[in-house]
Image 1 (cartoon, rainbow, N blue to C red):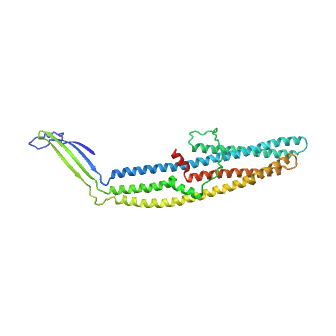
Image 2: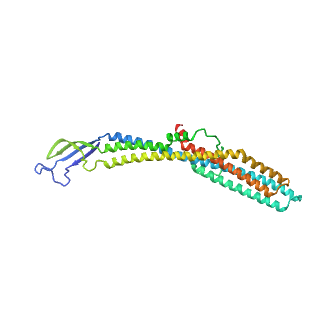
Image 3: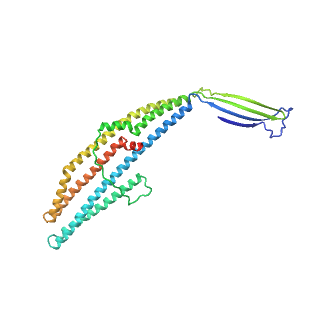
Length: 361
């Protein structure tokens, strides 16, 4: 309701209201007006606000889903680089012990001085590899700390755990079906369709004319006369040009747009599932191949060549070749392990598993 208070016909100019000049008297008015909404506009506004609230909740969950996969990928990056650091430190220790043996062999005249220097250069290269791996870990930890909301980044930040190696029990079609049922962005498109229907109902209601009724009490008090009176008011707009047809047409077209977006998102989710599944399947096959054959062979060749070199039966070039092959195999193994873990997290992210678990908790 609208309340109006007024004080009119005030003798501020010295006219001196009287019966002879028929001016005045001063008038006090109290008026209230009330709008009679038609078409259940208020109920439709409340319903539209409720649909907007649910849509905002789904948008928040979708943002959370994106943040979670970023944190998980950053977590994998730290663990993957830690494995590379372990490899670099292992190589450095081996060659440092090798330098001690070569120094003894040089003193005994069993090894040329140039061979010792070459082994020292190789050890320095492994020292550089350790420094580089440490820097990469530090950068990965910085990114992880930023994602989890640390106000100040710390060099002493540490994580515990291991790269995921658990097998996937679900099929590709099962993952897609769950994604369609619980992905926040897909649910948001469905919610948007419901919201647009509520908006259309509101716009149709807004096209209906509202009535305004009012009541007024008047008090006249002066020399020219005294008295009390009432007044009744009724107001209704004439919808000659504006019947809210533009907003009604907009809400109708937006409903069509939402239907197209829902279909497009369904196809995009299907493509995401296929791509993530291919990444998982490829990483799984590579892991099985490396663990079943390549890793053991590369380690055996490296160990055999190292043993032979220490006995003077192999050259430093042969040892470095064997070490390089072993390093490449181990690094490939670490990289595939990281890819496998990322694929598992990605498949869970596509079906919003982590977000759904957090919502239920």
